[in-house]
Image 1 (cartoon, rainbow, N blue to C red):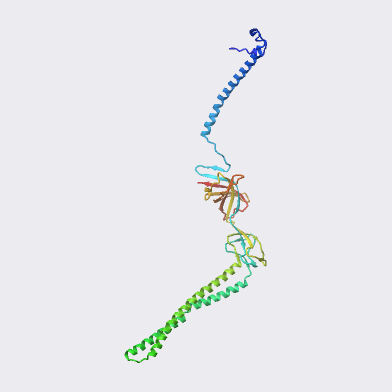
Image 2 (spheres, rainbow, N blue to C red; image 1 turned 90 degrees about the vertical axis):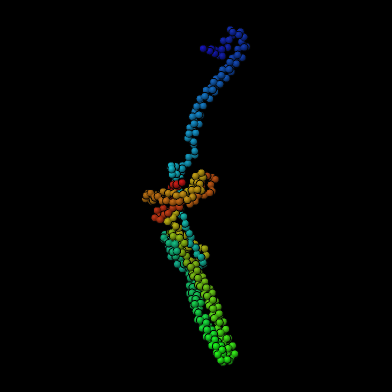
Length: 347
């Protein structure tokens, strides 16, 4: 079948058939509109039929392989899962500024920067001549009080005297039973008084010994207080580590609370990093981890650790949370300030 569309472009084409030129423009406009409508419908049907197949294929692919957000730090190894943090910073886990507990003049500073110290090592001391005299005096008083408490001679003497008086009274009463009025009543009253007096002396000696025991406790407390005052004049390391700063020198005056030296712990360090909030779950606390880094001569370092803290606060700007992993660094392979990477095992 062949269609002739010449009448659409030639005004004289329809003149033999209709005989009027006024009909031609109206007829031509109607045919152009009909042709445009038919082309639009045909193209729309073709586009709809053509798009159905790709959309169905995409939908089937989505159902077979659902799309999830992919995070750069998420590494999954079935059946074990690991969470990798590519960049963390090694920081100090424990550090302390050793303070002066009392006001005074520094008599000695026994350490230097870079020195490794054990817990309890003497760091510095204040002048303590007056406190040492107090310690000697209170120690002597405590020894005197202890000996007085241990002395039971008065109690023993009172006990023996009472026994003798009681025996004399008994013999006098027996004599009167055999021979009437051998011992006068006045003598019997005197002997009875000696017995009662001896019993009271025993109680008095026991009471005095109890007081001596309490006095001994007071003197011991005074001596211990003096020792504590002497200990406050000495500043010791509260932890094992390295002295990195000395704030005061020998002969300087310090006030209570003034830091004399700074010590950092190196055998146990912390690495700090950040995780996306979707991965930084609080349940990560307690999970084992491994820290990877390199030494100054580019030798690899691998140390075990444990997640000790995941911040419950989410940064509203980047939606990240802080995470801390503590590691044992007995060989001092890592140093604060180094960078590393961490792999946290997810159970």
